[in-house]
Length: 306
Image (cartoon, rainbow, N blue to C red; front, side, top):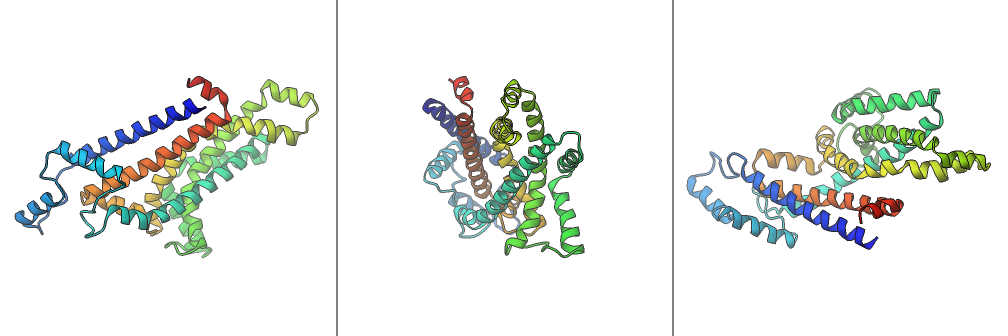
């Protein structure tokens, strides 16, 4: 198990280094720079480039940035005066993380329940209902789902606020809109996995021994059927967290999405790099945790990685 964990950690570190390197050089290929503006004279723009180190060779800028990253320093924003990227992330990430975690918990918990119910009632009305939800969820983008929820539950029926993020009631609609696609995917995978497990010999053996359906379902079927769901948890976390950018705009949530989008439009190199690396570190860490959990749950994975 120790060797397996060490290999996964090394792979995660290499992935982060590759991410930083690729994004750093791709950002430099963007047309223009943060100081290409009609409001700045050539002298002022030259001074700004010198202040941020843009007058140095590109490879030197790269190693300087790597050194700053090792100290947890993302640098200063080139658009927001006297504000570090660390400060902006610290102020906005809690909103994005809160929304993402709520959506993730909602998607996984309800998705598993719907998948189990559908599999246990195959061919019945409950199965049909769960399948319809899965089809709707995977067919409608989250921003359209957000607009639909705003119209019906916010404007027409007045049950929930349609914007801002000031309390629990404000989180329900954006979290639901963000979670719906993942919920549908999890329920579909769980249903298929449950049906596959049901036909296995050990389930037939358990029934022949006289075990109750409740024990068979929770001790044998769910335990084995949940493995494919665990496999997609890493990419699921990525899709949910990056999906917050659009939902934040629709529901006027003061998260990282606003700053990330504006940094691209304004060529704010420090902000683009800082937020990309921050999200990359967060998502690689989530994938690492999922890999370790998967290895703990299924020893065959550890054996196969040796």
